[in-house]
Length: 471
Image (cartoon, rainbow, N blue to C red; front, side, top):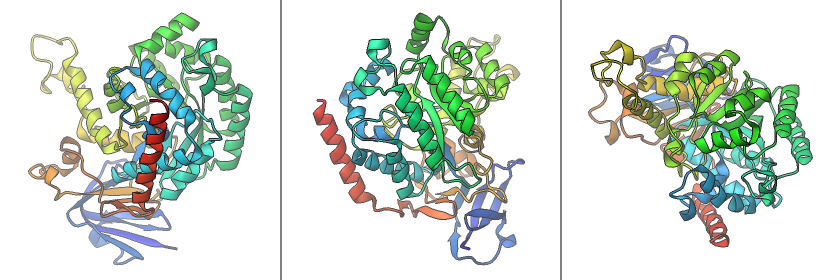
């Protein structure tokens, strides 16, 4: 059984129950599972692989809870640069449907590589639009090549324009085929055991692209097999207008009518919600994935993340699609989550005659998101969102998923009076090491499980071909 020793880290951020931060510390793992976390002097002296982390900070692997890896093919598309969600989707649907399994492979590998270089060890991909022979199997096989821990949806769209939906009819699937394939994918791939490298989720895309029947039937299958449910919800006011006009309900009430508010469900975005809906999520255990860069990029709004956290709503973090963000850097999202939560304070009405921007004001102090809270969302928060107790923190018995950052980087210079906060407040840097299940995915800042040069060049060719096809 292979052993791994990470030692001499300036700081180890455990995210355990006591939120311990240990100086001159590290961890020891065997066969991908942590056996010991503590001060370097207390750890075994050697192992099959030893990482000397002098000058580094070591943290639990970040967990990405919402992404569309295929969209790496359509980053920075001119037709979608300056629009909000609905016209942005219309500019992209046809290209996504025209991709091939080969296109998917390079996009998934590039996206996962970028995530790994930002310290991400677990990736959730909301995969849908299966045309031209594409299947969710394509995402699964590509993610395995790079070695990230993978959670993927058998996503779906079934409500085309002719039936009142947003996507073109040639981008949606038959519902019987969707449900049949959902069962196939779960039975073939889903591994619910601790340490699982692959789990399946069912994820009808959004209220404006699937029918109520598909939502209900997908939920039945998911609950029969014990897998999670995911969808976009309350991302924009356009979506709210759509559900009010078509079903006479706000999006959250519509989900509740479909039995889609529960402990096995989490939503992407959840920007436009009221206080009663926040309380409903908390009471029924539904979770939320915050996607700050995407929400800014598409002018969708600012999600009330502090309200979610304070109410006890399970809250995680996601980069969202690489064409509504144009990047797959989860450490950037950690910083953006903190900053957006602070921006939201400045948009609130004054609580009294004093400025609302002072933490000395007890009415406002709790509204400030700290750097450590932002890191919690991206680690233990993400684990809770995915329903996993084997990842998200550095503790005995958990997966050896972690990353390190070089505190000697220029970006952190002058900010090391609090190195944990520095990696959020200061400009994000790339991970020096990213380890998944005790295996190095990134070493000295570079992906080592696959040669990325040819993959990047092939992905550029694939993206160029698709863009030219729809120019």
